[in-house]
Image: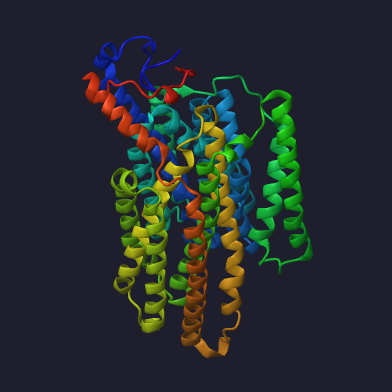
Length: 532
């Protein structure tokens, strides 16, 4: 079955005028589906960061060891990163709506198990399940957007997605601080997980009703050997990075990371063989021949490193170095979150259609400028720095980040064939997680190497001064990585393909006299495998 717009049931051979009466209902359904998948994406983004704030409460309440605490935070990230590519491909094969619903149902169940965990072991196991279910759910978000909205509408949608990313980045710590401090019904830290239950149940019910099913138009098979190889390679890379500092960077960790390169190479070789054999590889390697996709993936990786370093050292600087409460630290990040949301919405809808990749490069320079201002303020005010004094650099940084996050997704997916939308989405998220893990690993080098020189006999003043120095040192590294990102961004298309398509669609609409909602989507954007 084909459709005149990605979510209508009318056969494509019907004229646009005949489809027009149904367009308003179709539009409502499309945007309701978007709200549902965006809420799920926000739920995942918040869950990544919300736990960090509640760690002291979990440690006291469950008597968790330091190793268990590490697994509560790292277990989610490991399961999430290892399953993203597989989750994306499963959506291509069995249906993105189906996998989204399976993922959100499993994520909600795992959240309940986390909230009612009786001991550290149960909480760790539940977090692993939660990460695995997020890996089923999250890749479908971008894939559903990609096949549900025609090219000329995706810019607006990815602008909204960027705003959600910005809100999720800071809302997690703030929400975690509030829920833990309020101690609702005497549950202490448990509401940080239980809050997912009503959201997940609503998403499951509404998603079943409003999301349209889509899958790859040709029959694909799950590449089990590919699943094993990519999962092993990711675990060999990310596990030592996540646990390395705690374990004293053992030799086996370095060997494991080096060995991951060989496993990645074996994975690529097998995927080429699988493509020749039956055309059903786990990762469609032909995607990397698309310049916009390959360039965007490189930017996504390095940008993940930036985020991995900054958010962790920022939290440590405020809560340990300056001695602020979790709530005070969380509220300090509000200007940053708001700035990201505003800039993300403007970048895709207003700026990118006019200036193309220059917007992303301006974002990298703006973000670097905000970091340099933060470095200066941290040194200038020292222990007496106040949240309001941090507002200016955080707003500048937020504007820079907002100019990157939404257009980047737009650029990476702009020329991806629809039948590979799930696989591409899984790759985008996986590469971001890999970059984040690399950034977290580098924190041991750029931050803790400075903190380790703090002398305990110096008291609170020495602690604050040491953490401030470590924070400034880390931000200089982040500025350097942003310089690399600026250069890599030249590999992105000067102007995303879909904005040129949008102009063609608008011209066609004016010429034919149809409304925008009733216009036919470009031929290359029609999805032949959309079903209920």
